[in-house]
Length: 144
Image 1 (cartoon, rainbow, N blue to C red):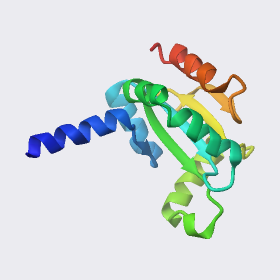
Image 2 (tube, rainbow, N blue to C red):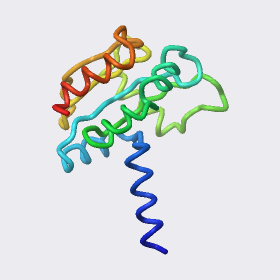
Image 3 (cartoon, rainbow, N blue to C red):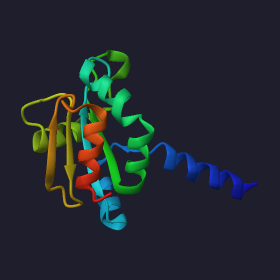
Image 4 (tube, rainbow, N blue to C red):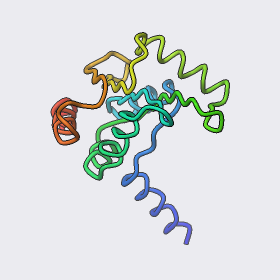
C-alpha cells in the first residue's frame, strides 16, 4: 500500500509539476537535476494576462510534460487582495527576485534561466505567439 501511494505521488508530480517559491531551492535542484529554471512573475489575483498565461500555457498538458522533463519552476507572485497576501518571509523573497530580475515591475514576466541564475530568455507580457509558439520556443531553448 505504501508503494502504491509513493507511485501515485510521483505520477501526480510528473503530470502536475510543482511551482517552487524559493529561488535558492530551485537553483540547488536545477544543478542536481541538470535542468533550467523557468521563473514567472505573476499578479495571480489582479493581472488578467497573468491569469490567462497560467490557464492557457502553464496548466496545459504540453507545458506540464515539458516542465516535468526539462524545467524547475519558480513563481514569484504579487497578489493584491488581502485574502491572498503572502507571508512576510515569502514577500521578502519575491521582492528580492523582482529587484534582481524584474526591476521594471512587468507582469507577467517569464524568464528562462540556467542553474546559476543567468538569464537565457525573457518573455514580457502574454506571449504574442500564443501558447503553441511559446511552447515551441521553450522546447528549442531547452533542447527538448
